[in-house]
Every structure is written in C-alpha cells, then in structure tokens.
Length: 432
Image (cartoon, rainbow, N blue to C red; front, side, top):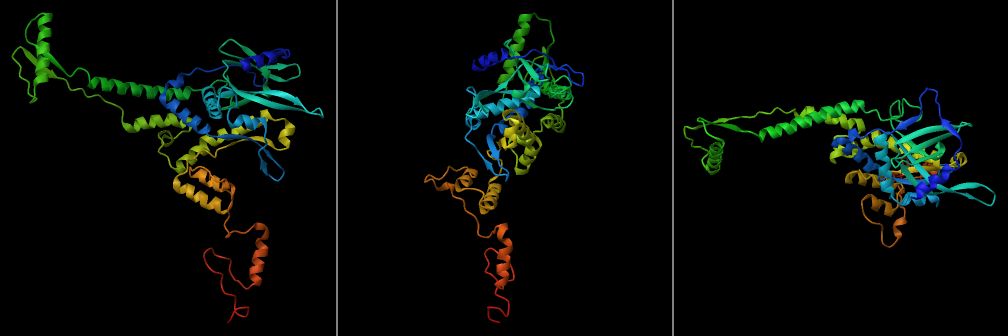
C-alpha cells in the first residue's frame, strides 16, 4: 500500500506529456508477453538455476577513490542491501524476483523509493527507503515539451502511474531491435525459435506417454466360439481372468469355446541421443549446461557457466543500479553499486585449499575469511581479523634494494623457500 500511495503523490506532479517518438518510427507502447514457454519444466528449471545463483549475490554501495581504494560507507542503500530492500522481500527474494521478471519479460523495472534531504548548504541528496521490482502489464513511454522521458505503467489491478524514466532502474535482455526495450521489435520477448524446439520436445514427451500406456493397455483378445448374450459373455471373461490369476505354472487350460490371441505391443520411442539433443537445445537458449542443472558439475563447468551466463548479469545489474541511484556528480566521485559473488561457493575442496594457499600467503584474507571459505564459523575469541603473510615474498617497492643488499653480501642467488642461502663467493667474507 505504501508504494501505491507514493505513486499517487507522483501523479499530481506529472507534466503534460505525449507519447514519445523514436527515430526508428516505433510507438513505445509495450504489453507483456504471455507465459506459454513456462509450461515446459526445462524452461522453469533453467531460469530457476540462474535465479538461484544470482540470489547469492551481495550488493554493496561502495566508494572508489583516485587510487582505486574501495570503502563501504554506512549509507541507507547498504542498510537496504544487507537484509531487506523492501518490507515484502529479503535480499535473496529481491534478486530472485528480478531474474524471473527479466527472463519472463526480457525487461524488468525497479522503482527506488526515496526522500529528498537538504543539508545546511542547500545541497539536496536522496535518502532511499525501499527498492520495489515492478510487474506492469503495459509500459508506455511519454515525452514532455522539454524532451524529458517518462514511463507510464499499467498494472493488472487497473492502476496506472507515471514516473520519470531516469528514476527507474531498467534492465533489459536481448536488447537489439527496439530503441528502449529488450526483446523483439515490439518490446516483447521473441520466443518463436524457442517455441519450435519446445513443441518438438512436447511431442516427444507425449509420444513417450502414449508408448507407456500402450504397453499397459490391451494385451490380448479372448474369442468365444459360440453365440451368447452379454451376461454369459461377462461370466466367461471373469472365468478366464480367474484362470489367469490361479495359474501357477504359466499354462492356461481352455475349452473349445474360447481362443486367446496374444497381442505383442512394440511401441517405438525416440532414442536417447535425440532426446538429449533436443533438451540441450532448450538449455543452451538460457546458457545453463545440463551438469549445472543436475548439480554434477566441477570447477571448470561452473566457471564456464559463470562467464557465459552469470557474469553479464552481474555487470548489467551493477551498471543499471549505479546509473539510476546516483547523480552524475556522485558517480564522478566514485560512488557505485557492486554485486559481489563471494557466496557462489562452487569450488571443490581441493580448489579451496589452493585458493587459501595462494591468497593466504599474500595476506589477502583474514583468518575468519579463510574459515568462511571452508564453511567454518569465525573464531570465538574475536582474533579472526588477523592477517598473516608469508615471509617468502617481498614488496615491489623494495625489491631492487633487497637484491642489491644481497649482492653486496656476496649471495649469488635469491632465497629459495625452505633452503639455506648459498655460501659467499670466494674472496669475500667466507673461507676459500
């Protein structure tokens, strides 16, 4: 209800606007596409696999200074990102909802609710209160006399609201033919190619169902070599069924009145390779390998899935959120939103140990962070913030001084971890 009240207040501030016109001649009025493709279990599983992985992301508002040093301010955005972007959703729910809307409609609109605060110098800043994913049935782009772009949303409840397009976080998928919307030329998902494959897959599944039913259906015909009414025919059939049930040798004795003809159904089903090919075509549309779907993936499998499917989503989320939530000045001084994927724990135990060996030796991880990689809780005594570093490394700033000092000491080779230094060369401090 709070979101509806907020939009009601915006309508009163709406300028006179007309439908926007774009250079390609299209009219930017977009209705959402139906959900026909979601009748397929493969489609639902593929999208769910992506949404589940994205829901593990940790969004953060950070500031990057001129020396590329990152800090995490105590901002209203970080408070929202940590647990609950809006009163109805946790952060996990919020991210999962975004992905489902994006893949269903090829567009997702997120409205950031905010208050404007003015400081003592008169500068105005936004204090964000909530972030809401929107699910309109119709989106109409409008333009006022100054060229400012608005978008009017119509919802299934018959409510309509109009907001400045600059105040909307807009993510698009397959952004190609249309000027402002993802999907096809009309701003709707173009699933024609996918529907062809789904139709073939559905035909195969129906054929398998009919083949199974055929094997469980009529197995034979009992012919009665005499004329009899329906009651007698029923009695003979029941007598025959009882004989089948009581036979322990597999041999059935019959009199001259009946003859049994065995039907041997031989249903033809599609081969396994063809079925796997069709399913892979569907999964490839979403960039989800079968190993990811079944959970039988290794490090290399997940890395390929991440680079092909997840990483573009992370980049798009970060850029869309940053562009909308910060002013040009705030972006210039280093404010941005980053979606960290630290909780995508896809590495095997062996790979985790290699990571700890490399990153730990460089002093990049605290003791608590190392424990978290392995799935353990932080140290109870609070000492887990300590960072340790291997003495086998030297700073690049003093590398030259280090080597010159060793040369003056007469040591011919650098230190090898675990081995003593070489003896000084002849004629120096050591004995000949």
